Picture 1: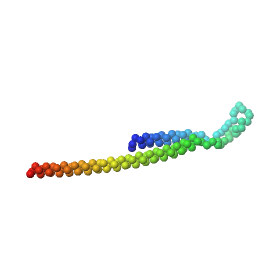
Picture 2 (picture 1 turned 90 degrees about the horizontal axis):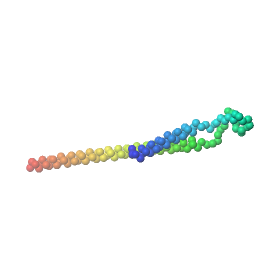
Picture 3 (picture 1 turned 45 degrees about the horizontal axis):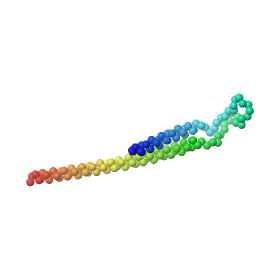
Picture 4 (picture 1 turned 30 degrees about the horizontal axis):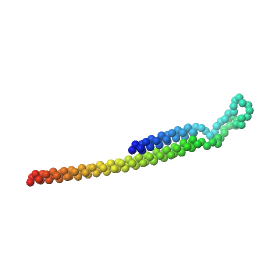
Length: 126
């Protein structure tokens, strides 16, 4: 695996882990809150009575962005891994072809050397 691809894998993995932290950090804020009126105030505050559940209408953008980031970084990690594996297989195949080519070249040189030795012996006998 090349240095560029390993750096990309680390980048996607770190981004994925960070987005998971943001997701889990956003999950502990519930859309329902329990509000209690102030203890020392007797006048109505417009807030619900103590112990009532109130639904917040705010959309949790941090959770949505964290989920999108987690999905994108997981996809990037998977794609980078697949491309790295593909490149490794291609390099291994090229390496094996080079080894075979060198073996054939050595065998050819060995035959040439044997032929030259035979010619030398025949020349020496004559």
